[in-house]
Image (tube, rainbow, N blue to C red):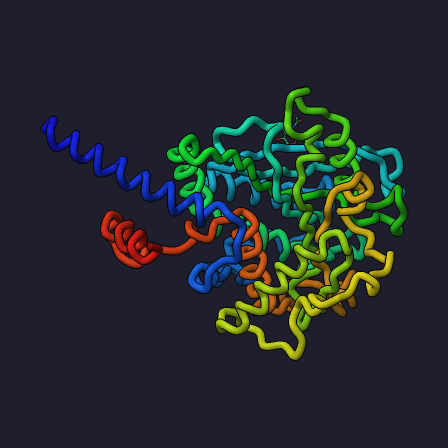
Length: 387
Ligand SMILES: *[C@@H]1O[C@H](CO)[C@@H](O)[C@H](O)[C@H]1NC(C)=O
């Protein structure tokens, strides 16, 4: 027994040495996802069904802050993550405010922050890809659903989380095992913000809009990390604020809004282009969803759309705003409901944004499904093919 154990141990050390070599040259350098990794990005499938879909349908109800619909949707998020993705931490950010429609009543605004960091990292030392959508719906017209605004984007973010979860686990396990040998201290996490109170209650002003986002940006800006930390504040640790809004209508045209994050827009646009060429998307629009990859520095104007990113952007956070211009024709009308969604467009967004997150988190080598059952056999095939 002892002998067998010993030789097994040495075989393992040999494998690790080989892996160290391969990984240091390959896995942890930023690179595009392979075609195969793109193929393994899952579709939302029936979970985006508007009547029965486990991700989307529970959000397609009125969810005005402080009402039972809002609480039901909060439960939907918390249940999903605590039951299906238990590695993700769940944190509330609760505030109250008065609105011009509700007089002296304190309306509760509850942001949910759901995230995963590498298991070994201290909170102040990790940068986080920050995926954002608002979950509240418009106060008036009464009964407004807001399917694109932003029920569908919330469902997309749930799909992204579950689609990268296993690859994150695998990657971080591998890094923990090999980290010392590699001398790597990459500290990259991911978090999802489901923001409350984006909508204005009467008409859009600085005071009557973005209730949740304003409060959160202020909190995160004024809470410093321990002095020896890599990042000054939680706000400072946001590597990219990727805000998605008004997605789920057919033929979206999403411009690149900011020169400072145009490179990230180009990354997402490239993913769209590659997925279309590989036949992985369901829609076949005349123009791509993200058509402005070639936009020149001089073509950017200072115009932007008021949305949840603004309180973060004015504090220096890098923002990628994925919102169509023009807005969907159903915007802020009773027609912005499940029946008016274009589910194929929505599902294509889910794939594109999942692939973007996987690429950002450098999950390329961990996102693929094992082609054969036997793990050892598979590992040796992989090693040989990569040599
Ligand atoms: C925030 O609100 C949620 C949902 O109502 C509640 O479960 C949680 O305890 C609250 N957190 C704090 C710190 O008050």
